[in-house]
Length: 118
Image 1: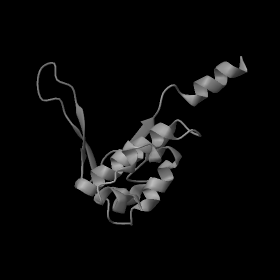
Image 2 (image 1 turned 30 degrees about the horizontal axis):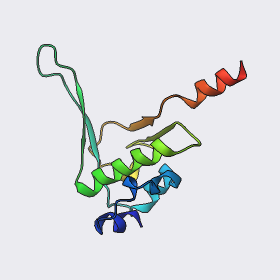
Image 3 (image 1 turned 135 degrees about the horizontal axis):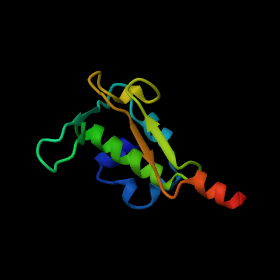
Image 4 (image 1 turned 135 degrees about the vertical axis):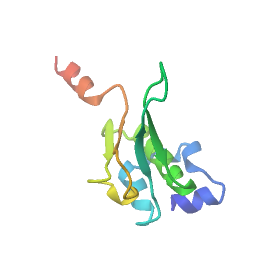
């Protein structure tokens, strides 16, 4: 279990062990109800400022998101992965979540495939 390894001080994300883990595996490794992410837009607050996206959660919830990002970074079969408070992955969001999260690794595999076809 990734959670147990992390709590023991053995972070598998730092020694290459994440490369064979699918993003779905990360999602499956945390029991339902243990992750509670809240996402929302923070409006620009001043001149020259830009809106920000807030991702809020306890330590385990943020560790989950970090592992999900690392798994997607190394996942060889797809360049994108998304979770949504109103769709796939909704179990990791709080009821107050306003935004989903889409991770996209570049270069895009769709572009590579299109270029290979030319």
